[in-house]
Picture 1 (tube, protein in one colour):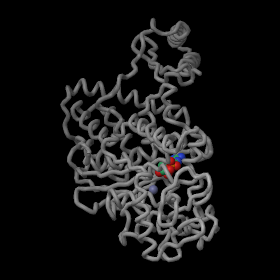
Picture 2 (tube, rainbow, N blue to C red):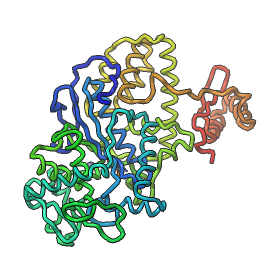
Picture 3 (cartoon, helix red, strand yellow):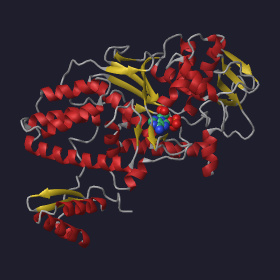
Length: 486
Ligand code: AMP
Ligand code: ZN
């Protein structure tokens, strides 16, 4: 299944840089094996639907992969499916997430996992993520590998048994917490983890938990029946599928203090090698200043976006307007604007394709596009360059098509194969009251009553139409679908 299909981009010698949480700098990307890039991304805990914050994590990884593919790398990708062992608090406290989901929907944990894995895959496919070239291992399918890794950590003297399970002894590892800085670990992660039930040090974490009454998932192990701690699944699956050392590890910034430092600790003790050379993290999506999260109950799902008539790729466009390392605040207005901008892009790209008659040529702008995204995924700058190109009256259609093709390889916005674009609607096909508003706006414009004509424009926009001034008067396009019309 590996590698991906190679996208069409102009040859470029521009170097690839990524901001690396491990070094705290923007580092030149050099893969362990020439021409091959291995990448692991912490995936969904499938006890409920994935919200648009989780989907930003998937898009972040997809964009990194697209940049590498366009630079001729064979990309070997894994996204894990967490269907066991993840407690609500991310540490060793709280309820088991899969149990929460199973009890909520009155089905088995396996059924919950199937339900929400399916939904996750459907969602990321509608965001134009090619799932055929990613492996999605489930934690429950790698229990033996997790047990073997815990045994190896134990043999090396970095684990101890307590009454409720087996723990990693962080005091034995002088560089524990090196990702993002130990101070951050103490501040953010440590505060949540209580020393209890025989845990020796504040940051020690469970490798194996002994079964408790009411546990729905358990497996036999050398330490008795139970289930693995959450962090060990990633270490064990990376080892089993991608090898001892990988190029890139991705995830949300919430994983830096605890989960990723624990992955590093386990893997590096078990294999004696650095786990990943580049640790890349995306910032949160927030709503009204709060991180979107299942536990806060402020989730927005992709289905909420499409239910309002916005194209799923509007979310992709929305994310690209900001750097992945910047927190982004979600609003329905911003999604509506992204939807509209995308419709315009598609319309313009159709015009370019018609004019270019499918012939594209290389240009300085296309090479610049590639160089911009290779510089730490500078998607806002790349989008600006795309708009600049499409508006450039000097550039030929063939050159524009070259830029569109190069941009599409990275953005995955269907720029060169746009779906049916919503176009302007003939006036007689519009609702009666909209026809009246158009007539009144045209009269106001003729009478130079611009305040009134602007008010009518706002009214039309409120009703979900984009308003343009055509040669014979107002032209409206129903671009916002059901938005604003509830
Ligand atoms: P989870 O299902 O909670 O394990 O999360 C799956 C992925 O989504 C992880 O990489 C998280 O770091 C990431 N994530 C969770 N919430 C957000 C958010 N609000 N914004 C961006 N990424 C997030
Ligand atoms: Zn992980």
